[in-house]
Amino acid sequence: MDGNGRWAQQRGLPRPEGHHAGTTAVHEIVCGALDIGLRHLTLYAFSTENWKRDTDEITTILETIRRDLDEGPLRDLDVRQRWLGHPDKLPTELVQALQRAERRTRNRIGLTLTMCINYGGRDEITRTAAALAQAVQAGDIDPHLISEEDFARHLPHPDMPDVDLLWRTGNEQRTSNFLPWHATYAELHFTPGYWPDVDRRDLWQAITEYSRRQRRHGAAPLAITRDDASALPSR
Ligand code: FPP
Image (cartoon, rainbow, N blue to C red):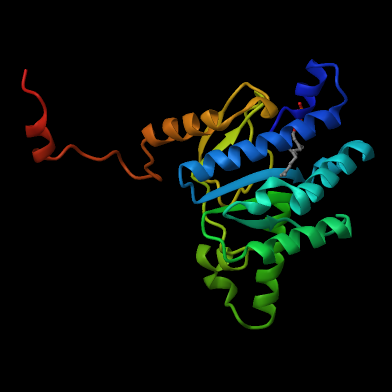
């Protein structure tokens, strides 16, 4: 969700206004996801690197998210809310609001909305390595036999699905520590507009483009079979 600050700057507004407008865009995109029956939507709302920002801006972002969890319109939608990230350094009220939202919505089935807050991919991988080391020390795993499945089972949230489509707004073409384990085969989609300007049609457009891509996961392109070939128009 990149470009909140520039969106505000462009209008001569303080940066916090960009984050407020970005929150409205979150509501719009969640509604667009529900409209089309999307199963998972994961938002990168605050990274482990965002602590480098000005204290006032950090407070605005975290308080905006806290208020939205407790009072925002997503509360009444068929959305299961989840949180990915670490409680270290986060305000207690926000951690409690995130945990409350997870509890309150755990039986909903429409859309799983995961918010990455105080999340960093390298942090996640480091914690996973530590968990694996502990399992080895406890004699539960043979270090010579550690598999990708073992690694995935020791992730802080082992049930997170792989990322199919990674969309970044704001005219930047990088993934910035976002779900590196899960996004290794993600299709990338970069758009120039700022996050507060997106609406549900942008989400649908992203998914339409994604659906036209051929995902091979390292396999060779599908060969044309004899049956397919006979269905082709003859010259
Ligand atoms: C990146 O834009 C945006 C963020 C670091 C914060 C995103 C947070 C929100 C949209 C609020 C989230 C609300 C909910 C309910 C999840 P930037 O500030 O880096 O923009 P810039 O690159 O133009 O400076």
